[in-house]
Length: 133
Image (cartoon, rainbow, N blue to C red; front, top):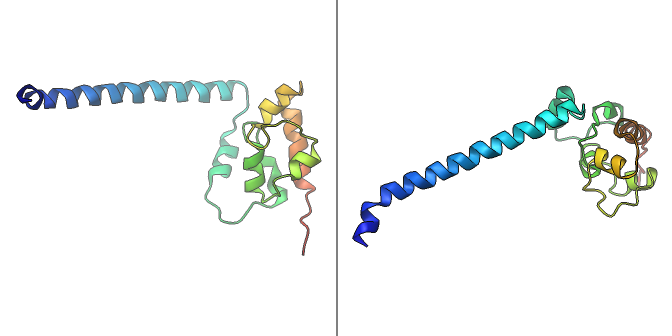
């Protein structure tokens, strides 16, 4: 017990060093993922900024141009206040991972060009007409 008390400072330093190493590794992985998305042209700074801008109201369909391949169907549904099944029905999506799958992954699984599919999603959002009750 006495040894534990004497080495308490060393244990804390070791734990902090391990946590710092984990943080560095995670930062490196995040940077690599960001670089991969940029290289594949799946990430656009303006769209990222607009999509993370704090807005309480949903975006109007006229802003559909901000939709990017990295976004999930669920994210698009939330940003534009679409019903959960709207894009699934409009685009005939039968993937069981809907709405949690990113647009580009769904496009790749269907052997489609991610940018062409993203354009289809944008068009579907632009033509959405909410039902008024």
